[in-house]
Picture 1 (cartoon, one colour):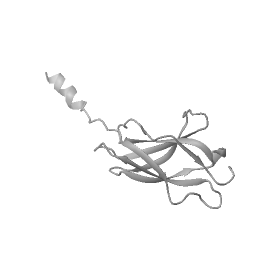
Picture 2: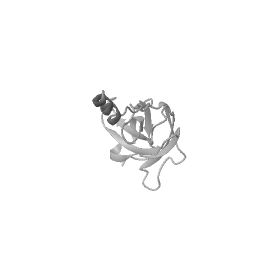
Picture 3: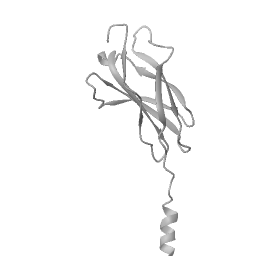
Picture 4: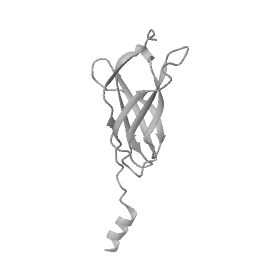
Length: 130
């Protein structure tokens, strides 16, 4: 039993990190970055379902054909928050008229939760694509 006790003590069980839920997005007050029109502030809100995260990490994906295969970083916000504003590239590579999805997960030093996804949204700019 001494060997078994040593294994249990040296391999403690950590509580799983729970995924956030109900991810909702909206555009912020800064729709365009003058004069280049290349980014927009995106406001997010979600339910914090974990008590052991150190931050939340967000990404977005752009598509014109309904497939979301490449995800791009939006950044992170502190633990124990249920909203954040992150600046998103808007018209990079001619992507100012596209379908987009957002996702967020809770993270800490040793693990991360599963992703929580937003609904699919269509965004377009009122200026020429870059």
